Length: 302
Image 1 (spheres, rainbow, N blue to C red):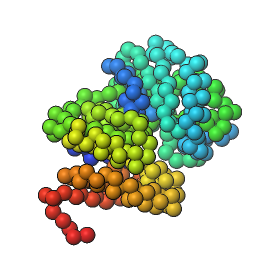
Image 2 (cartoon, rainbow, N blue to C red; image 1 turned 180 degrees about the vertical axis):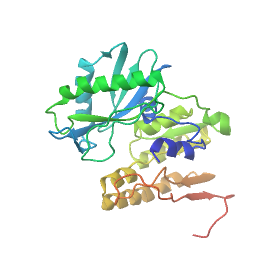
Image 3 (cartoon, one colour; image 1 turned 135 degrees about the vertical axis):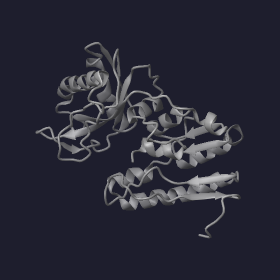
Image 4 (cartoon, rainbow, N blue to C red; image 1 turned 90 degrees about the horizontal axis):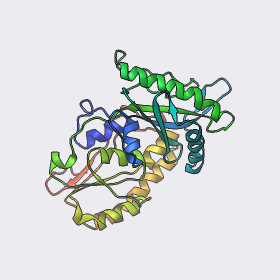
């Protein structure tokens, strides 16, 4: 699964009932306010060869500063397509968000990301081919590429971009209403902040390392009953196929964990939203490990 449905499942929402596009999640995580009818997409800068085929889906994981420069150039030249406003906002690293704001727009649409190298940028299509609002949104995305790709030509490694999770914001019940607990989020990357905001968690900005996240959790311990703490690096190094770095990321998490244990929380759950094996360099179908510790959960003696 993707990170969106994976996390919704962890939060107790049926991801088949509540379909949330990654663009919506990423936009909320960046602090953007979506209006009714907005269609949002998460985008990655990528590297294209002379034939327009993708040679690196993440543009070598360019630094955030370079992403900001590319987004500024696109924003300067692309403010509107037909009757829709176009909002381009940089995220972290090679990621950014595109929002189309206009009348009669809807998602979801298929990704323009071919999901592997060696293929051209895919054409987006409505999930529901009979939805005229989604057809209009798909046409806008095609027009965006027609204007944007010439602006990025010759700007390797980020001379193209791929769009994923193209959708509008759904109605979804709040976490606090479902579980009668005050929830807080401590995450670094915008997408995971957006997931938390979508279900009504309070985002706390600032901490950049897992040690800082655990320390902030301890500071806020009496203000909330539930903490969502996200750790990205195991997934990131899995996507890179870097087994050694992924191993070190797990060891770094284990080293920091005693900070969280200082407060002796009633329940600790450690798991993942999906597997990302280094051998595949992609999300997979493999089951997730789960550590659940509390005085009432029982024990398997491991």
